Length: 213
Image (cartoon, rainbow, N blue to C red):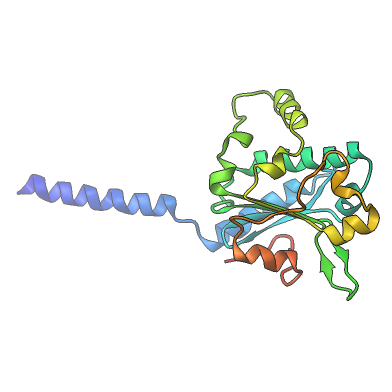
């Protein structure tokens, strides 16, 4: 009887420990997004201006200059996609990316004066763990070389991507006939969560260091 009593006590204590070790408070999340936002704003980061959390997804915010990069020389376009791929790799296992990662930005104003993103790329948790980003056992140079060999892989392997056709075609009528976008669709919509449409339409505008559950 005494042995059974101690088994119950030990089991109860272990369950408490398991709960406490897995529980993440709102303060923890806020502190963590502050840290990620600070890291991503480092001067040597050419493409990102901040980060936020939305519905347990990490949102990486692209700089306004991304709009120009998206319609620049093909080498600049390629570097942008490689930069997005590398950032997805860096944060794919981050605890803030419970459900996935959205990369979005390069905002421009439409005819009504509303801000619209020029590009967004979303990876669900399953796709973050897919083969495209599975480069944990290779060197940095090998990883970047792999991304260079398959520049549009970051779009093709995503859960969802969107390129603002009204903007890009206003700059370049043959945008998706230009490398590296040869013959590509401007949107891959299957599997996109509904809330992403709110980001793409400008209903939701990403704001650094914020948490929305």
